[in-house]
Length: 375
Image (cartoon, rainbow, N blue to C red; front, side):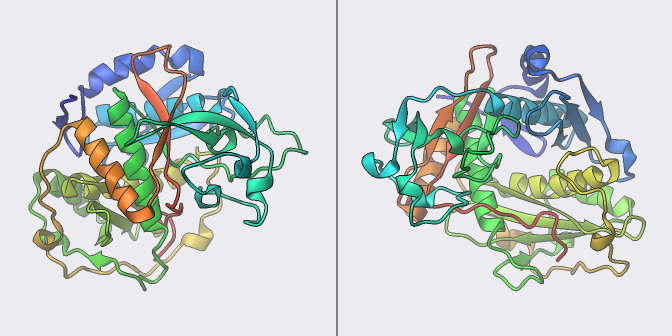
């Protein structure tokens, strides 16, 4: 049974300093040249860090955020290492068509599909074994749905699945990593259902009603920097808290957003807020490979954000505190109740460190988000 340690804005099984030391072991092998503090390129002051990996086959710069600089540095390093693990080759245990396999899920329901439903199950694909998160059974999944690499594709290779890092996760243990992956998939599924203009089920929170100390410290920093915050809760049937946050200021009149999901309401909101700050610093620093350098289309000189009326006490969920491994099982069961399909873990090669790197696949969950789309 795995205990969990409460940290500012998150849970972990060990301190961020211990995680940092474990991550540093992999820096040379992964090609991480530096992890830098970019917090003060903006004037908000909520910590954001970047990890640089020039030889990356995906993104050369990864971002990390947190309530403290130590957490932000660890977040950036772990995100970069996640991508490095996903880029590495995966041995195929089987090659064939989905229709010839007795899969416990429909390949049509794997997120990121880019080709017609009519013949995806007829494509000859490479397959690798994953593990059912509830049954523990060995389940074949397409290698292309697990691996992430932008540099090794033949022009004749038909991409059956869109490239995405959703569900790629890491942690100090398999349970910690799996929980991050599950919550990210739920978050992207829920945020992807939002529409511009707030014509959806989101409920705007009255920021002045927040009474959580860790959240109040984030809100105070935004207020002192004259940055407007809009925080909205996304009602859902998964039994978790999910928020989308947007920020805007006259000094930098671009709407930047973030989303977060967790069984702990405070942590979910903290993730959304800090990710919005991270998105803003990503635009300011201009370092991320897949972010367009032009931001003029995002500029709005009139504050487009709205105050909320929903009291914080009305969105707080009072769930029992669980051990990490118990919460993984609970979250997986919630997904099964929604999709009727068991989430699947595929572990990467974790032989070089004490950390866990893996990918979670959840057939039936869709992928998308509105983190950086103006409302």
